[in-house]
Image (cartoon, rainbow, N blue to C red; front, side):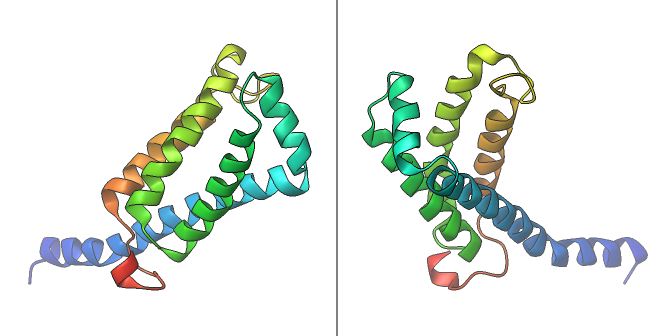
Length: 140
């Protein structure tokens, strides 16, 4: 086997682990974001914030459920493609909330760069699938 073939084979054998690393990182970020709404901002505070934006309060509950449940599903590698796609509208909504604050998320009120990047990363994850380290390959 040539050196190039060995390098290609080694890279291909790492690919499922790289995909899993992205999936788990997205899952941890999503779960942490949902739990922040529960424990830091509190559920009533999150509902109030959504309502202050002119959104129905029930959307706060759905967002928390999507982030906590979706984050756990991604960490475990369950329904990765579908969960990733389902979380994209949540991030588009977050980008919409921060749209008037400019691009950089360090701006006052946060910008829209981070939620847009996060949404793109979720689309990439949906395209890649689960990778390795899933609790059940049939449910990946």
